[in-house]
Image (cartoon, rainbow, N blue to C red; front, side):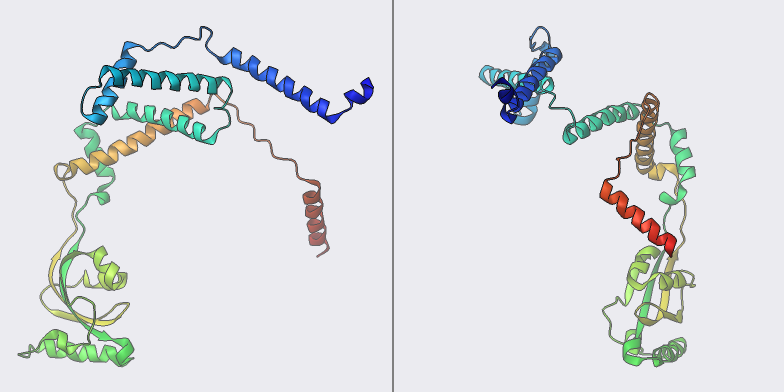
Length: 298
């Protein structure tokens, strides 16, 4: 009877469960604070009261403060018990939050030191293109639709160009071309913004045109155009005084990343990392062998 009893799966299950329960309580008692004391320090009292005041724009009453104490104590009790139970282990959310908190503390240390003018000027000298004034052009255009005119669109544009150069009176340039939803006139506009509407080749071409006369035909992704550049502003670098805030923002972000990466690299040196590859399953191994054998036969 005893042998039969010992062989029962239910008995095994109960025994394993009891063993797990004992191990859990052993670990819980080992990790829990020895004195079981929760102290609400003056600093914590001030922190709770300040948090309440920021939220409600007034100081808490004694009853409300007691409620804050109760909530904090409840949180502390459950937090300690969760740690004792090991609920923080292998939890993706907890791990991610702890990583973020450590990186945040590192970032705070990097933000404590503000850059000098020399730091900012050096950063600006290394990255002038991020802060330069982009070239801009103001122009008018007459459009010739290749879908409507086919291969004759370019010739029609050239013919209209000749009429405009003869400065015939009473000519409205848009009437020489085809109807379009594209703007006939643009105020001073950055070249990259022109490219977003008409295409990059068109924008780069007209950026080289001399202002004051009609030019073309110029091809875009829509068809052919005659273009009159009325104003052109060359790109130029800007002094530090004009872009100080933007440069400082870029410098601080780069500094933050540098400090975080440097701190991590120093911490990383404390560890030896071993990556253990999982053992291939039998069916996967046999399939790989079959593929290899087939490849050898071919």
